[in-house]
Length: 192
Figure 1 (spheres, rainbow, N blue to C red):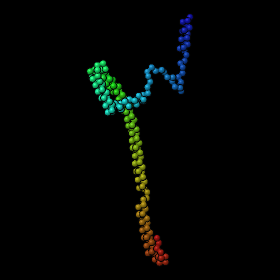
Figure 2 (figure 1 turned 90 degrees about the vertical axis):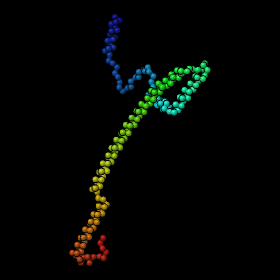
Figure 3 (figure 1 turned 30 degrees about the horizontal axis):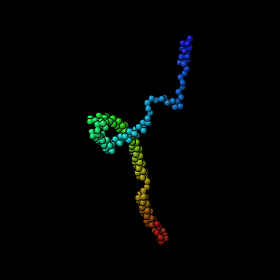
Figure 4 (figure 1 turned 60 degrees about the vertical axis):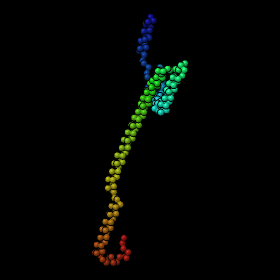
């Protein structure tokens, strides 16, 4: 009887509709077993470390530490030495430092490559805008030149007015030749 009751409950659970997923609300965060970190903060830290590893200061300090290590382990009494002659512990420490430095330097280079890629893309877009602006201005200047060809310039107006003045003088001379008495009766002041 208990088995039949359990079977009925299982059947009812199978028949129940699944809960509806709401898209207007954020999901409930699942617990994570791995530690969380901020990739940007980690990237900035790796860049600082890589920048320090690439300086002369780092090389000087590393040289001073290695020389002190070797001098201490060669000249100190046997009871105070912590790394005897083949300097295995020093080799291990340098290998550990190198194994952490290489990925940090690569991470810093990748971030720099990403920044360079973004800057290159922005420069390319700026160049495209500059070329488009230059082409637009070139077309505008060409249109203005074509328009100026149709516009009366000062020199053209001056030559036209001189031509009209000559034509008026010629007509006056013709008129004076035809009607001489009219010129004698006119005023003493010449026309302008």
